Image: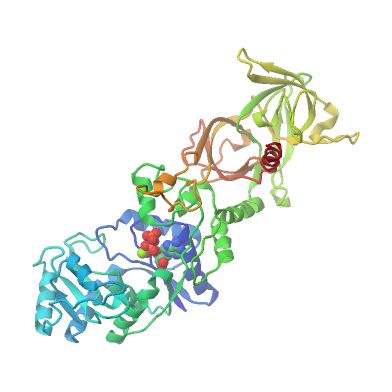
Length: 537
Ligand code: ATP
Ligand code: MG
């Protein structure tokens, strides 16, 4: 089995590509075959070497292995040209002087047959001479094309004398100025597959109607015939998977770049903290079909959580700090308490976390007037500080405008490690950090980039950007995190207990770590609160 993955280097890889990559590389691996990487660089105007490098980086990260089989469609320009000449000689291709607009007009529609070009009857000699002059640069862009001579009445529009070559006086990222005529994707693709000995040419459903054309070229040329097999594109709720539209988001500044953690790109996902394993498991799960469907975005998030849950260490971080003073804890004492790194992995061990008289807890974990079923801290109530002690809230300190600025608590020295020798129960365990020891950090919290399940569903005169979610990014500036994370490298992943999975962002500095929230944990409180609100109204 020989497969290939054929990206066009005109944008970054997105989640949809991960499915195609999983299929082509995965099938080759499963059946002891090989998968090539081939850049389909037939369009010099749109292609940039920046994209080639980025695509290679993303593919490596996803675990794709093409060994030394990295190819470019442009590697085959000489052969493709020779085959075009061969088709002209066989009377199967002709030079056409119609403009692009006329070609479209002559092509007809689904319900109407096309009309033959007035240049269709040119002699082989005239065609050879004109094609040679096209190549030599004698004609301006768009003035002539080379077309396959097939059937202008075919019910399949792709067979109505499709264009094989167009004139483009443009520099190509690999062949420079060698060529001023370039093959179309439709002419090049099948022959490139053939040259590489591809057995299974796996592509998306929209190419089903192109297959008869690819077959026609291969038959006329009498060369190795790969079998093209089509599968459904990946569509995801709340997500756009089109390079053109993703480019628009970047160009117009709707996001911070191709690798913005909200982008459905592979580099965005990497920056956000998604893992190659999560993509692999997701792609295995969704499988392939012959009909187009839409996959729920939370399914991908599920596989991200599942993978991270297994492998990343837990730490304590406070997103919105509320100061807590433990009144009966000695002023000068610091205890190093044992904390479990990962309850899912016994080999992950434990670490020391400093505990002292002044702490921060999450603002959300305190309510002065606790609603029903709110079991966290409130005046007079006792809760467990994770890995530390049981504490009771004694007093609430407010500033002049009535905002809570500090809690005064007491701790029970008998409950070190969170144990209760007398067996008494508390209903809640909350996270905390030591005020003096913790580090400041910034957290970037993400919601879906689009507010609508189908971002392409727009009102009149709007485009998909009208569906952008204005709340897709929330920056929380003054978080506090455990001191052990001081030298956490970019890309390191953690579970902030009770808050979600977080990944160190490249924007981090020695003074201030920046974290992206990769995924939330399932939030049971939010569910309860929603239900309560529903019941109350
Ligand atoms: P776009 O429509 O985003 O521009 P494309 O199909 O033009 O994508 P290519 O670079 O040509 O992008 O794609 C390389 C391979 O990835 C092709 O085989 C293509 O079929 C596949 N692919 C692209 N988008 C998806 C998707 N959403 N789901 C599955 N496969 C995809
Ligand atoms: Mg394409």
